[in-house]
Image (cartoon, rainbow, N blue to C red; front, side):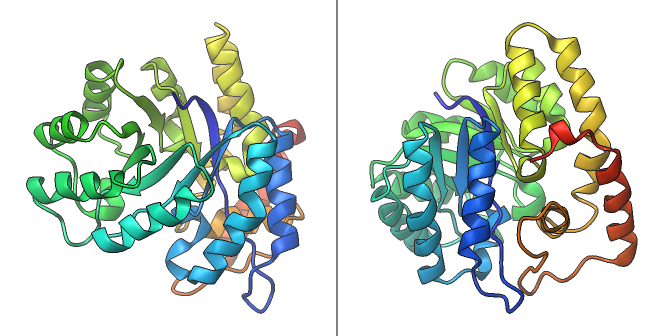
Amino acid sequence: MLQGVFTALATPFLPDGTLDTPSLLQLLRAQLNAGVHGVVLLGTTAETPTLSALEKKQILDVCAAEIKQAGRRLIIGCGTNSTLSTVENVRQAAAYAPDAALVVTPYYNKPNPSGMVAHFKAAADAQVPLVLYHIPGRTGQKLAAPVLSALLKEVPQIIGIKESDYDMSHVTDTAVFYKNRLSYLCGNDDLFPHFLALNAAGIISAAACVLAPAFVKIYNLFTSNHPQAAFDVFAQIYPLVKACYLETNPTCIKYVLHKLGYGTDVVRLPLGTISAHSKAKLDALLAQTPKEFLI
């Protein structure tokens, strides 16, 4: 089972837009020192749609072994809206012995039920456990209950779900109906306490890039039977968590990382620099957030 806080690692770039390997390692080590239970490499927070195949390999080469040596779990983002490229990504990821491959439901093409099942079956052929990434707001498609049921029945390699749906009825149904089948992982940072209350196994968090100590503390407090103390920590970071999504992820997170000394705030097109208004709001909230909760 996958349990705990997993940071969806951002990709620092140099001012000229090229990969900043020293800052990447600095950020990774800060996450490990904060006590995260695992790291997701090449998730969408890493700006994978804009990374070349060589850059993706460089990130895996730099980070995967260090994560494993630290005794933490490794998840590698592999999903695309092409089954062929998804399968190839999972095969390449297998060389790094990940604990799971993160595979999003195909975006834009909106596969029908038989296509969705076939897509995940093909991804499972590489014999790497899968975490299904359900994010209707990005993919334009929500998994209907019968399709999810078919997926979990016909693709036993799916060991978890990163759930980024804001429909709490759907979230509750999934948490209850499949509580003994998989690791249910929160994919919305602002709903972390809600998911924990529904017996979720943990979280895959973009905001943990900035707030890993806080997310780890929330998880540890909640799982040691101190839910009120966990919520008190969450309440203190909630304004900054919300502000991390003032503009499209990971633009705000990279700005905050830059302010904390982890590389530049450079993102790749089609993402652009955040507004002066967003910067001012993030600056104010960052100053108000207890330093113990920041990396």
